[in-house]
Amino acid sequence: MPVIPGEEIGGAGLGNGSVHDSGCNASSQSGKLCMSRHTNVRGRHESFTSWMSRCVVMTKLEEFGPEIWIASGPQVTAALGFNYPTRMAVIRLADGELFVWSPVALSDELKTELASLGSVRHLVTPNSLHDLFIASWKQAYPEARLYAAPGLQQKRRDLAFDAEVTDEAILPWTSEIAHIVMAGNVITTEVVFFHAKSGTVLFTDLLQQFPPRWFRGWRALIAKWDLMLAFEPSVPRKFRLAFTDRKAARAAAERLLSWPAEKVLMAHGTPVRTDGRAFLKRAFRWLTR
Ligand SMILES: [Fe+2]
Image (cartoon, rainbow, N blue to C red):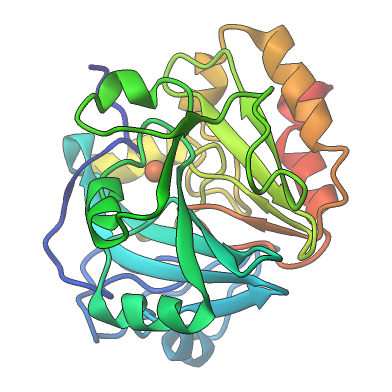
């Protein structure tokens, strides 16, 4: 198994809610405040007071747009000890059923909030690296259907998936949430989603951004090389290099750039809340130019 930052291999054991919305200093603990400044998506530093006010733990669902919510879970520790914040999203479909994307560790608080929104019916693992908590969600919601990104079923033979999210798949949410498979990457095959009602594109690991002081020492050097500390969310260098089928990747990128995106979510990074399409054009210029 390749050793790469971004591949979550175990929980950090910090407990629910140890990570806030966009990630802060890796040494922060649940309920404490961060001590570092933060760079927003436009590259400007927020004031320290503003940053601290947002840096308290967020375990509750936050409304991100019409019929879409986000929540942060505990940090996870990836290969080589890289700590990652985690984020999930919940979309309420027209029939009231909930589409849960990249689920984080499930807490009683989260379960209570979800119950007030609707019925958890679709558990979606958007790439083969974000499967840490999927089994516990299936246990908590046995009626929910499990959906796997390409490649995950081979990895998680302990789980009975209901469907694989291929490019051709017509799924219960397809009329409300489009998807594109970013094929041809040797690290993982990621499925990118677009929720039309909120204009939100959902990325998992293909876009990332960490605060400048999140990593320390040699990990910070690697993270900088990997473009994980850029002034706005970027496609990490390792993922760029791992697209061995550039033609397929370019075709997929051009398709997703046609979406009328207003917002962009990612599992590890500051959400982009305006001008999403323009942001995505910048983020994928290395591939489409
Ligand atoms: Fe990840």
